[in-house]
Image 1 (tube, chains in turn red, yellow):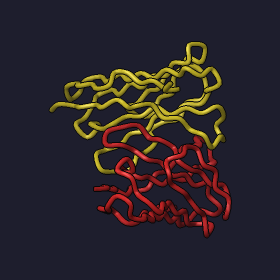
Image 2 (image 1 turned 135 degrees about the vertical axis):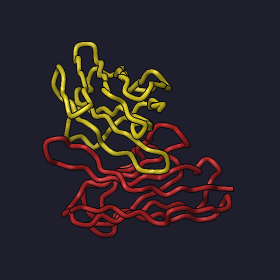
Image 3 (image 1 turned 180 degrees about the vertical axis):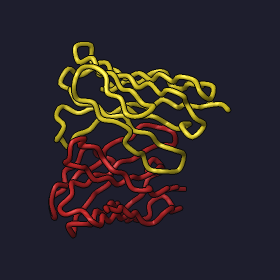
Image 4 (image 1 turned 90 degrees about the vertical axis):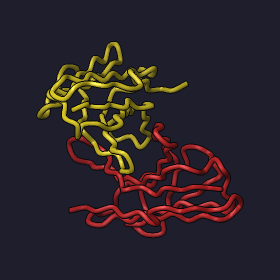
Length: 113
Length: 112
C-alpha cells in the first residue's frame, strides 16, 4: 500500500526566515507529485507539480520554490517567508488507474508571524 | 476568475437527510470532474470521479454530470454526522492532465 508522509506537522516561523517542507511517498514508483496551498477553510491552490526526478513545473508564483531530489521525495522551500505564506500545505500524488484521483498527505500547518 | 464554482457555500442537513452540492465550470475545456472531502485538519480524500454524462453511484453518494451545461452535482443520501466536512469539486481538461482546478468548497454540517 502507498503511504504519503509530510514533515513537519506544523511550523511557526518569523517573517523573513527560510522554510523547507518535505513530502515522501512510499510504495509508489515514479509518481506524479503535487504541492498545494490552502488558506484556512479555503480552496486548494496548486503550486507545483513534478513528473520525474529533477523536473518541477511551477503553476503560480508565490515566492516559493520546489525540488524533487529523489523519486519519492518532493521539497517546498523559500529563503524569505512572507505573512501571506501562512496556511496549510498539502502534498499529493496521482493515481493512473481508472479514477485518476489524487491522494493527499496529512498536510503541514504553517504560521508566519 | 475562478474556473470552478461551487454552491452553496455552506449547507446544513439533518441526520438521515439528503445533501445536494453543486459545481459549475466556466471553462468548456473542463470535461473531467472529481469530488473530494476534507475533514478539519486533514488532507482531502477523493470521493468520486465522473467523466461521462449521467449518474454515477457509489454507496450513499451519487454524482451527476451534464457536460453540455458544465454542471456536476453530488448527492449524499442518508447523511451522517461523519459526513460533516468541506467538499471540493475539482476539474481538469484531461483525466491525465497535471493541471487540476479546485472550487472554493461547500461546508456541509449534518446535525444529529
